[in-house]
Image (cartoon, rainbow, N blue to C red; front, side, top):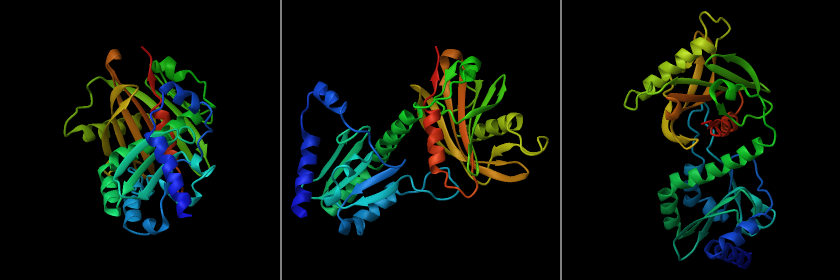
Length: 330
């Protein structure tokens, strides 16, 4: 088994270090099978002893950390440990793979589309302490690499069955790749709402615009976003009694704020929880405020989910994939 493991790793490292002609690589990728695995599944190829020790603890603390913006703790990735000797076809076709190997040489390598497409493999080698050090040093980058790969795969899947409604383009001059299972449920002069029914609730995508510069970029940014969201909820997203109930940003939960890029434009990404004023109802949301300087406006796209007692990570991941497909027409 150990000889097989060594041979496998040598082959993988040869792939990582080879100097291929870009055209040859592109041609070879055309014949690769599609990658497999559930959404946000990270295959960890690692010896069981390391997995059960401090190296495994470090991996779980990074890639199994709670997802931002959800009330119940759900990990960023679902982790699947694989012994090196079982990492062979078709197991090699997992979409996101972290390979760990104890060795005399400290190594950190990233490679795409080795055994399938889209695929990302990150190889980390060295002593246990060196492996842990590299895991921590490359934490943000590696999480981003794997997440971007998962988003790419989800967006490619969505393109297979799109909603052809042109309301967004007619109203705002924008497009979103929205799955056909979403249906438009509301259209106003400056507000469009699509909804998908799920087993115990709904998934929702909304879009609207704001005046350019209306959200400050300083220590008041979050307060301004909360105030804006609450006013939009009051105007367009009513509860059971529209006079007293409407969607607001949950007061007991501080949203997360990040800088982002959408359609190659600067954007603000906000993740948090929504609730209905004066009513026991809520869930997670993700909001992008995109600078559309050409049209002197802020383009806002947001998604939120209501699904009591259901895991919501993958629901929100689908919504994120939809929102990040935004294209603003010139």
